[in-house]
Structures are given as structure tokens and as C-alpha cells.
Image 1: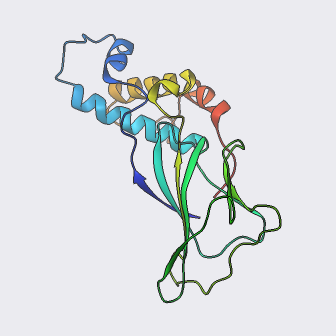
Image 2 (image 1 turned 180 degrees about the vertical axis):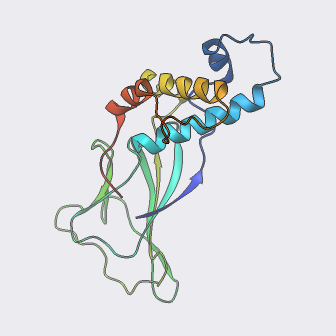
Length: 195
């Protein structure tokens, strides 16, 4: 599955004030706010990449060349909230939107979530468009920033603190060293499925 983001998170899981508290900075000092905001985004991106999860609500497109030989399509990033649409594009470029409940079901209870076939239904047969003929639009993430687990928020704070303190790459015996505490905080939330 190829992926493209449609809607970025509207907020970060950790705000600048909590980062300033973590760093023992004066909350009224604003000179570093732009830097801290960019470090928060970088840290969130790293946590998402490591865990395979979307943290705060975001909307994605997933593209397939063909339907799978099984009765479901797993969707990445965990915490599936909903599937907005499943569409096919045929060889002449005509788009067809599949109907929820009759042509597909959405399983938000499984981890990760998935699109699945109803009982005794098959994936539609069509002559596919040569590029991205199946498009699934879906919404994922924990929801609001307040719903992101504290362990992942703590990992973001530690990463931001490290990036703020060491503004250049950390090299130890020729290789980049990852903070073990950060890894331990993220590990319980890691998804292992590949897409």
C-alpha cells in the first residue's frame, strides 16, 4: 500500500508550555518558541515512525494496484477512527465509490484497523486504471492531544530536550545513539505489521 497524507494533525501531542516546563525554561520567554515548535514536530514524527502509529487525528489516502486475495485490507497507523471512502478507478478513469455495509465493512476494533468484506461478498471486479486504481481514505490517530498516551508524550519531551540541548548530531563510536529510555517508552505502543 502506498500512502499520502491528506490532513496533517491540527495540534501536536505536547505543547510548548509543557516542553518549557520539562526544560525548566521561563514560560514567558518566547525567543525559542519557533525552535521548540519545530523540535516538537520532529520528535512527534520520530515517535510516529518508530511506533508505526499516528498520534493525533490525521487523514490519509492508501493506494492499491489490486484487491488482495483475502477478505480484508489492513490499514496502517493504528487507532483507526473511520474509513471515509473506498473507491475504484477503471481503465478509462471512471471512479466508483463502494457502498459501506453492502460492499465493505470497517473494523475499528482490531489493531490495526481494516476494511473487510461482508459475509459472502467479493471484492469488485473491474479493469483497473494503470496508476493507483484503488483509493482508501481513512482517519486514524488517538484523537485529541489529551488522548495520546503519557508514555509517548514523555518520549516526545525527552527527544525535544535532547535535540534542544544537542543541536548537532550525536556521534559515539561512529554511530548515532538512541536514548534507551525513549525506546522503552515507545516500545509498548509499536505496531509490527508492515504495509
